[in-house]
Amino acid sequence: MPRASRPVTITLGDLHRRVEARVKSGDYASVSEVMRAAVRALDREEAALDGWLSQRVDEAFADPRPNLPARDVFRRLRAHHARKAKVKAAGHEKA
Image 1 (spheres, rainbow, N blue to C red):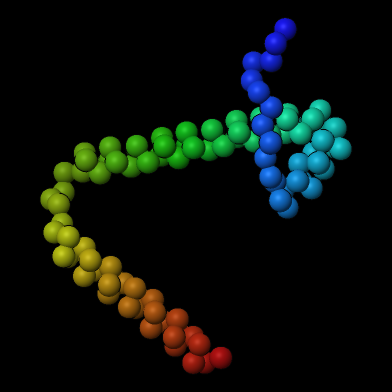
Image 2 (cartoon, one colour):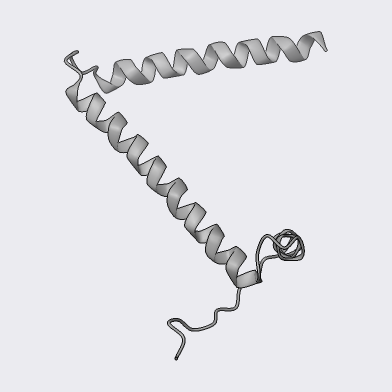
C-alpha cells in the first residue's frame, strides 16, 4: 500500500535531543510518531486558544456597557504603564 504522505525533512536544532529521548524511552516508536503527536498537540492548543478568543469576542459584543472612546482607553493605558514604570524605577533605585 502506498504512503498517504511524503517524507519531510525538518531541522529541530536543540529539540532533536528531546525528540530522540522520547523515542528511546519507548513512549514513541519513531521520530515520525513524536512529530505527529506534537502537531496534534499544537492543533489542540490552537483550537483551545481560538475557542477562548471567540468566547471573549462574543462576550465583548454582548456587553451592554457603552463603548469607550479610544482616546480614553489609550489615556488609561499610558497612565497604567507610567505607574508600572515608576514602580520599577523606584525598585532599581533601592538596589
